[in-house]
Amino acid sequence: MVRLTENKQFSENRAIENLPLPEKVYLPLIQHLGKTCNAEVSVGNMVKAGQRIAGIQAHLSAPIHASISGKVIAIQDWPHPVLGRSKAIVIEGDGRDTHELFTLRTQAEVDRLTAEEVRKIVLNAGIVGMGGASFPTHIKLTPPQPVDTLIINGAECEPYLTADSRLMVEQTGEIVQGASLIARCLGIKTVYIGIEENKPEAIKAFSGTPFQVKVLKSDYPQGGEKQLIQNILGKEIPRGKLPFDIKVLVQNVATIYAIYEAVYKNKPLFERVVTVTGSCVKSPKNLLVRLGTPIKNLIEFCGLKEEPAKVIIGGPMMGIAQYTDEVPVIKSSGGLLLLNKKEAQGLEEQPCIRCAACVRGCPIGLMPCQINLAAERSFWNLTKEYSAGDCIECGICNYVCPANRKLLQTIKRAKLELLK
Image 1 (cartoon, rainbow, N blue to C red):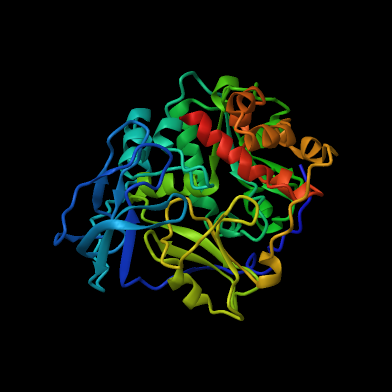
Image 2: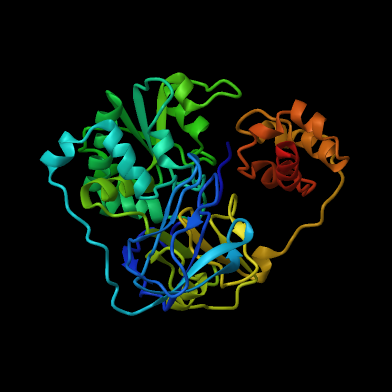
């Protein structure tokens, strides 16, 4: 792991604000790891906020809900923040923000829910991992074997991003209720929350809760599941295995908050907190944004000091650069980063000098330089032997490489080739 310049000071003390309702939203039919959803509405249909508009075709999927009330005006190809382009349902808002009826559950009603009923609520709410991986949460709540430890991931180790930090400070009680619910349903006795040392407000907020607070070093990628488990429990996940295999479940704080809202408020996932920050942003903020909102709305709301040279959804290490400001916020969009020309300037790639900096820096013990050389020659079977598929795409290899090799890019290419 490495120590990075954090740049969190721009937004870490900015309380969460509501972004004004967009005139239109563009809701991709895939906002999760897994199978694309099927549209359940047609052009011309009127919908309410929170209404299901796309259903699942497979277990590895999560339904999509309308984020504003209004009229479905198109189902068309549209820019996607991860895939480039995909089918999206376009809703033109009516300005009234009419919601589906969200029935509040009392604590007594929640306490009577079975584990299977909670999983069904989470599935119907369309909740996925909101730390970036976007894995359907109902599957993680159905472990193939018993788990005895829950780790709440509050590390938020990416530079610039502060959405999870603000959520921990402002919604502490709700996160506690959501995590306690998960623990009860899965029979978990031990709950930890891992928070990096650069978040003193969040550490203080959780210090009086039933959970064990683990203060972690502000190193990257501290928020990776394997790193989190190793640094909190001292356990290593064997290669090719998952946290379940050592009886551990890890959930991001935003995901847990979404579970709380689904179970206690009967509210599906149709909005999330997004950090808008960077050297080009006039007023960095943490915004509660309706899914499907084009990122240009967020940029206009926060204002610009100068025209950005690069726009990234996510953080600088694992985020994805965007080619248009029409791309919408989706379930995994935790940040919007705007960089100036100097920051965005690419570095000239040089030949590998065999220094092994990437090997020393890799948090899971891979040899990125060797995978890179094999991938450049299209030796895909050799990249498999080098375990390219285990890469967590943290970007440290690129960051530490003195030759500016595009190691991560070639590893991603290898992973795609291995899936064919």
